[in-house]
Length: 272
Ligand code: KIV
Image (cartoon, rainbow, N blue to C red; front, top):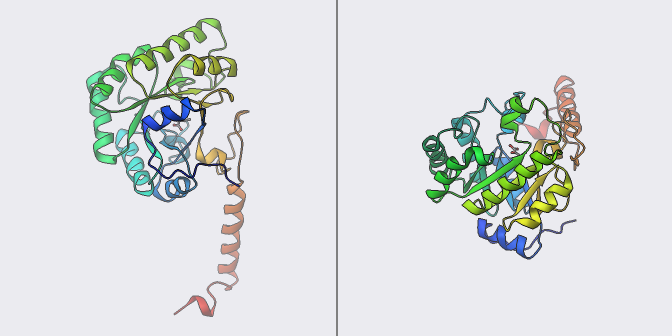
């Protein structure tokens, strides 16, 4: 079963805007390595995000903060090799762009030059405007990210829903308008009330990609390990699991161990 487009042309930032204009939803998923990126691209994904969630699901860290620029470039380089159609966006990691726009530009240029990713994502609004503008000025497309921004988890102190209060909701709206005005090509809204996300999506012309932001936005993003059921320890309300790979992998590996121990593997046909 598939409803994805037969259009095999390369997805570009411009095509995402066209999709929003004609009301076609945008599908985005994370990937961190060549083999999974290839499968995800072949399935028809529009955007592949090399997320700094690699810090959690690939490196086993509790937060996204420890991952480095070099590590993000390594992941993005691997992903790019497996992708033909999807637009590949790479997260700028914590500490590589906040508070210093020259450093932001240098970090974004390294990602583009060394990994060949096609855009970067940066978390935050007015506080990082100068950094975003500097990156944009070099012709590097920027995807914004507002709401629950995991790189600021130590400031928030909780992964609870953001912007439930009027003041924070108002700031989020102002930030989204600002990101549109300075030239971001899309904005991720994470874990905010659905009504607010819908309002923002109607207010701005750039595509709004939601995660835990309801169905009134222009597209959805999930972390691959969560939606495939590899990472079963994470079950927020917004997550839909499309597979139980943890069980499949566990059973397959247990079967292999059993076959080795009982001398069932390899058999005569499986040797030279
Ligand atoms: O790093 C990531 O995976 C992300 C998504 C949750 C949007 O930023």
